[in-house]
Image (cartoon, rainbow, N blue to C red; front, side):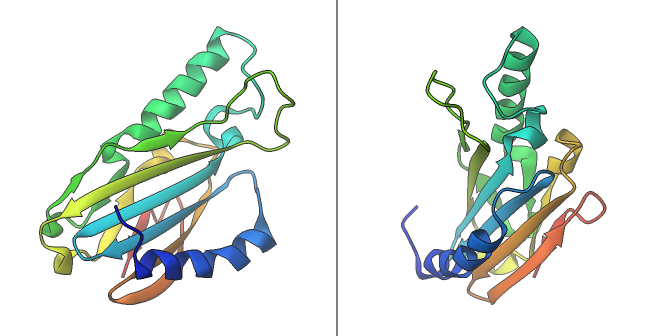
Length: 165
């Protein structure tokens, strides 16, 4: 997907918030950009939320937890755009921390990007997530959206997993 004005606007909005808040256990962030028929979602989570630790895995059970988190975050069903928009998912990209023997990070994050191509973008009015069902230690996502209809923000929770505009 090409860099759009909506993405740049969302990035500009996000920078001050990221500088103020930083890494918070139990919380993640979601950036949603709508550009013509393209819907792009960028998710950032503390590794601890997904697997219960922020260091190199120490045993097979922890290695399996990392693999399961990567699989869950790659699932195209993690996000459901408005059905009437006819959005089809592209393969997700998930970036897990690299535990390569160097000094371990103080705080490790996971980044996942989900892109969709929407046949009827004017019908796109919301995105619902199932992420809270996968990661019980996640209690909120701070979501920001930019698109043709403007910009907005919302807090998603297990009881309110829908970003609507």
